[in-house]
Structure formats: C-alpha cells, structure tokens
Image (cartoon, rainbow, N blue to C red; front, side, top):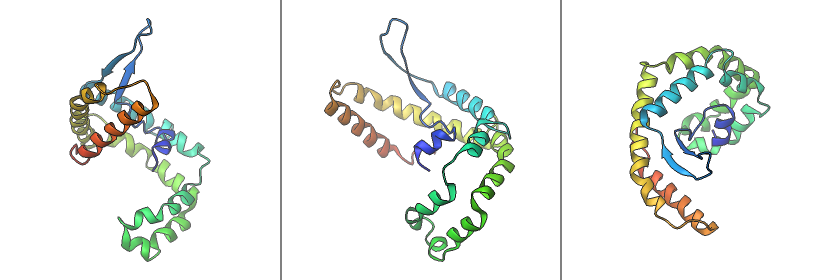
Length: 175
C-alpha cells in the first residue's frame, strides 16, 4: 500500500510528529511525547472503526480499482509470497472476489479494527511499545538534522536524504 493510499484511507502515517506555528508566526519545533502520540492513535482508531467510521466510509467511497492495483504489484509480492504468486493462486483469488467482495469483507470486519485497537488490547499495547521506541529514536536523531544547513533546495534534499538514511538505519528495531 502506498503512503498516499494509506492517507486517503485514513491511516494517518506520520501524525506522531508535528510542528506548531504560534500566532506570532515564529516556527517552533516540537515533538509529541510517546504518551501523546499513543493517545492520538487510540482516539483516531476509535473514530475510524465501526460501520460508520471514517475507515469504512473512505473504503466504500474510493474509486480506485483495488483489485487491479493489487495485481499490478504482483512483482513486488513475488519475493515475499513466491509460491502463491507463481502458481497463480493470488491473482485468481483476487479476481474471483472482485472489488465488491473486498469492500463487503472489509465492512464486515470494520468492528474488529476498533476492538483490536482499544486501550489495553494487544494491538494498542504493541503500538504503544512501537511508538515509544520510534519517538525516542527520532528525538535522538533530530538534532543532527536541525544542525544541517537549510534554506536552499540542495540543503532541503540533503536534510531529507539524511533523515531517510537515519530512519532506514533504525528500521526493524522498533517492534
């Protein structure tokens, strides 16, 4: 799933970091605490769950061809699901179900999303542990980015690439 698709579906990647702009216009850098990020995640998942939640509504309203997009990504999946893709089972099952079947199955499971993310649930505990480690890692590495030059396209690209390298170095260590 692409990040833009995830955002459209209301998954809210990247909402744990934020910048505030006070009324005087001066930009202050701030980062939420793990407890604040976890509370926002719990509130967001509660609001998105259920048959009338934003997640189910956004899924029903999308005009993107869900099955066609999934099949287009078959080569990416080959490395992870080699056997299922090579024997055609994956594409055949998706074609048999179709977009309508995927939407129907998702709506039928919408309440599970809220149940699995309620405070104290295994999903909420896992997320809390993850976000605590992630925010600590980001807070530890942000000063390096803040010290880099800024104000030009080249400087912006250098900062962006440095952040991507930092996050890639930490990948897999937050779970």
